[in-house]
Image 1 (cartoon, rainbow, N blue to C red):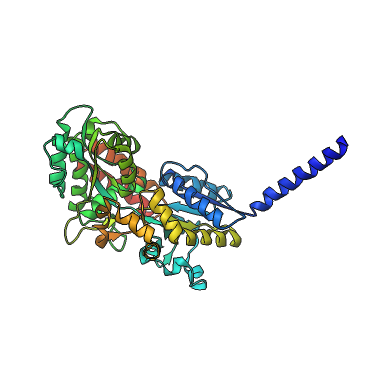
Image 2: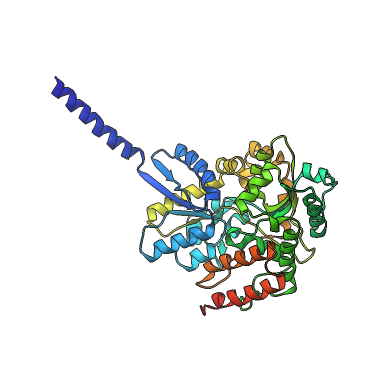
Length: 422
């Protein structure tokens, strides 16, 4: 009898194992920076529920997109298996040029009924590299200026009439800084992935990293100098004495010790939750020079990597789900991003209401008329550029390097990388 019981138990155990394997007949692995891990886990859980037999795996990612790029390039070099789907805010050009990502145009042509094919243009345009689409934007984030209403009030400012240009913003930051430790008047995130801060400061002044033909850098220019001078002025408004990383500054702002924080709208929701009832987070659009300034946008862009046809099909199915009403609602609920697909918003009364109830939504939408994608310079060594840029930004904002010197140094160090001579 005992032998019979053991046999039954063995059969049951084996059946359980086979059932577990059958339960997940397909696995989708997604690589992403740490900023997007929780969002993708939430979308993945909903996708699994809608697709029994599918397992979505989102391994913990590195802090920055730049670190993730280096990791994937190393994996490609040594012939390691790549993830099926990649979700990053920048560097689509790098993945396209290196042959890691596949163009989506043929897939869209063959499947015109896909949500991706019908979605808002920004969904595809943010993934454009040259003439081809290499990614789909799941959400959108824009540069914003966030104010601690309580510190503004204590410094003699009016939270209901906040400044809209850099002179006014930085003047208020200095007033707040005079409140004394532990308060820091102003902080601008200088160590961002893809050197995003320098990009939005430069573009908002009417400048660009390179000319249209991509033959000449345009950093050591009046626009580049004005962008770097904004960083210097933040250093003078308290940041130079505050030895904090981007993540530490976000925590400090939520804790109530930074008066003005310049970053991206994806952090607003986190800051609002951290502030609680102690103060109100008021966000304003990034200052843009009228008539010439533009604003790059960030946010999770999904690219299908070169895996098997079956995995590519599954990855495309995941993207389509993420762009639908359920996926876009998760974007609105589980991150600070704004849904990128207007079709999904129009199809969901709940999603419409949620967006309308966001108190700082106007800070994001105000600059959409001049919004662009996230520019990545050309060249096989382009992945090295963000680190070089951020190093100089940190030197400028800590008042260790003059804007003029930084502009010249950046040009000298970056030029060989875009020309392929280093």
